[in-house]
Length: 381
Image 1 (tube, rainbow, N blue to C red):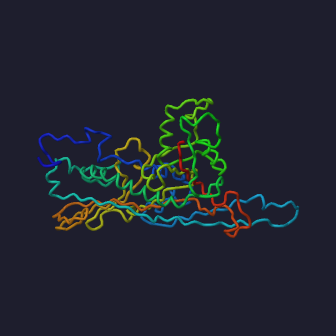
Image 2 (cartoon, one colour; image 1 turned 135 degrees about the vertical axis):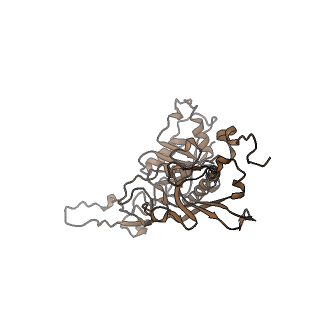
């Protein structure tokens, strides 16, 4: 029996294992999902999509954010005179899409000829106009975890050096917060657990729900809340609200095992650049260029990873070609090469968004260096 080909009876592993099918599992990439689901809303002049560097016509332009620094009490005067206390000047931040990830897969004609007939059936994804073979649909789903994971790791790495100053500590280093264990004793501490994080958010003048990404002890805390109730002081920790948590397994290696990032709404965003749209799309030589979302089989991810559009190049190889796959050279006679790519970046509120004499301002704001992002390491003593 040829592996995966067309024997009399063929049961696909996916039909048996369903959401536990190894090939289509998506490793939780919570930071990416946090960014996509909470991207700053569309309030940008001449843009139909927040933080997108293309307008859908194939033309690419810079996205420049302008901002004013808020005034501080020291800039007021007690004298009733004609003295001018301040002159507001806009600052600008250019947002680039500096990162790129791609994955190319190859299906040789000789393999397709041995698959079942439905492998070459032409299908469309999510109503997109460009059809391609059903076999590519299945194989793209296999590649989804690699692309999602790689993009998430790049974004985590970018954010690792961009956390703002926590006014509580005066530093952008991770602050240790203890979530007491069952044997921690009976006290009503205002400096532990979720109370500490919410207090820090208030000190940093955060408005709206907190967005939290990470893993480790905080993930265990959120799982525990489903069955939590009152402690000996009558406090029901399951009633803590005001935050949304996005588990991210990759964060453990990049931020730290028990580290979490806490973000105010609008402080971070996913910057996108789609190249194969408008005049850049269509048949170009032997390639078909278009954009599409990944056909991810992940019901709990709706509105998340599956809302990201990827650039796609579908290219036919009509001559014998030698390709290198996993370090080994392989010769294919003819077949289809499908490349999925994404240009992207990370938006952060600039760390000089508040006044500081070190930036040439006249005064220093109490939130100087803060950009709406905080970092914590969670203990459980």
